[in-house]
Structure formats: C-alpha cells, structure tokens
Length: 336
Ligand code: SF4
Image 1 (cartoon, rainbow, N blue to C red):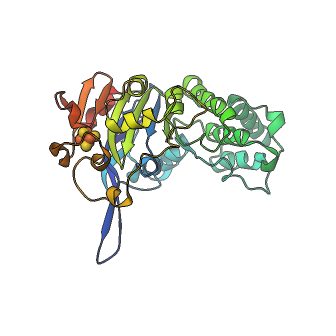
Image 2 (image 1 turned 180 degrees about the vertical axis):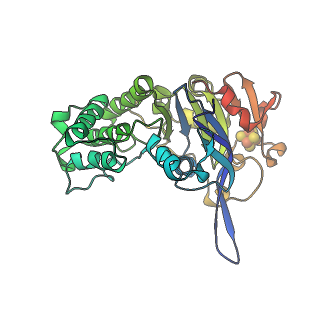
Image 3 (image 1 turned 135 degrees about the vertical axis):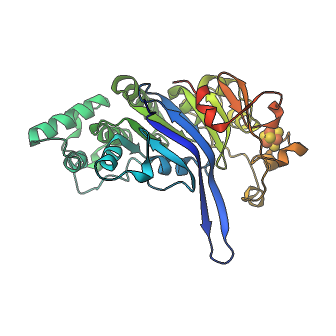
C-alpha cells in the first residue's frame, strides 16, 4: 500500500532580483513518510526562519517544491487534477496559528461550518448539515448548544481554535497540518487543544503534522520529532529520546533554555543569539556553524545525518563515529 504522505528529498528555494539574483534556501532536502494505516503525530520543530512554515505550505499544496516530490497516496500532488485534487483538498486539512483570522465578525459560527459542507457537498439537507456540525463540535469537546448561533466575539480564543479543528474534522481528513495551533491561545487552554488533537489521532485515525517552536507542547503531544534549523534537519527521532537526550548542539541549546517539562513555559521565548550577517544564506557547511561552540574544521562541509541508534539521528560531526543515514531513510527511525 502506498504511504499516505511521502516527501522525497524536498527543497524549496526562493529567489529575488533579476540581474543580481539572491537565493534563500527555505527548506533543504527533507524526506519523511506517514503510513496510511498508522495514524501518528509528528512534530516539526524550529525557530522562526527554520523552514517549518514553508514545509506546511508545501504539504498543503499551496506552493511547489523547487526540487524533490511530495506524494499523497502514491500520487505526486502537483499532478492531481479534478476529483483527485478535490479529494486531496478535503482529506488534507490545516489549522493555523491565529484562531481569529478565519472568522468573519459579521457571520455566526454556523456559517464557518456550513461553507465546507456546501463546498464539498457533505450533506443532502439542512438537518443533515446540522447533525454533522453537532458531531464535529462534540468531537472536539465543545457543547454545540453553547457554540451554534454565536458570533466570533462571543467566544474565547480556545473555543475558536477548537471550532477551527471541528471545521477541519467535518471533512473527515486523513492528515491535519497544525501550524502553531496553540501559540496564540492562553496557557490554560493549550492542554485542552492538544488533547483534542491527540483524540483526533487516536479516535478518528487522523495523522497530524504538528508544527511548532514550542518543544514542551511537542513533548506532550507527538511520537516523533524533526528539528529544523535554517531549512535543514538537525536532529530527528523518537520525541522522548530527542528531548530527554538531545545530541545536536542546536537541540541542546533549545532544550537548555526551557524549564522541562512545563506546558506553561513556551520554548523559543529566549532566542539563541546570532548576528544578522552570520545567518545569511552563504556558506556550504553546517548551517549551525557560526553559532556552534564545538565547531571544527570539518564543519565547513555539510554534515550528513548520523544514525545514533534505532530512534535517533543527528546531522553533526560530533557523532561521526556512527554510521551515516541517508535522509530518505529517516522515517525508519520515526515511531508511529
Ligand atoms: Fe557544531 Fe560542527 Fe556539529 Fe555543526 S557539525 S553542530 S558546527 S559540531
């Protein structure tokens, strides 16, 4: 059976200027696989500028890779047309950071939920449409009688974000791309929304790519993690192993900067300092070189991934005694 989702050596380069072209590599040679019959939650973590939002846009088909391919159920998503494209649009849903942005203040919540039902012809009657709305709201832990008929300003940020999840759920997605879904929600509601996402995976068979700058929430929700820095994979593996025993200097610095484990403290609040000139797209070596306290001569060449064990790999020459791992084999280390 073809995987649900497969990224094969995907890179995305943005260029600007006509005569003096300047290129920025937003994502560099990322491969991952999600199996169709093993719904899981995978975290993609990184600071701002790490390429994680570019990855979300690629997964949703909003932008195309510069090199590499993305397959959904065995088909390159850039080649999907007609009914297949419609199915992809229905089955791959997104929940974004801002729970307020998708609401029109002049419409009640019902409207937000009715639009996808009409667009994808999910119900034959008004009664059936309402039943579907009730079912989706209940599935995300909301009481439909408290929500339907209300206007956005009458709801909390947490309720709005859960309505966004319910809206995605209406379409019976196979894959949810959740890009910083709790970063604009009060700390007290974060655990609630994370539990809702976990229940979608467990009870509704939805795989989730959880994109975040917040390692504490990643630890609480995901099975596996990929840490990105400036578009490249720094470390990846089982979330428990990577967070408790980080081996890449970048991951270590990130984890050292948080009191672990604490859902209410957001990882990434303290940036690791780097001068602007140091983080340009110049240089072919390790992307972390100018910030790394352990940099060596060999680091001027791009480090491959080294397989540390069955659950962890890191792209760092400090671990060069381990066997190298091709990036397209990375998914073998990621538990489901
Ligand atoms: Fe530091 Fe070198 Fe490892 Fe990069 S490869 S993280 S520069 S030690």
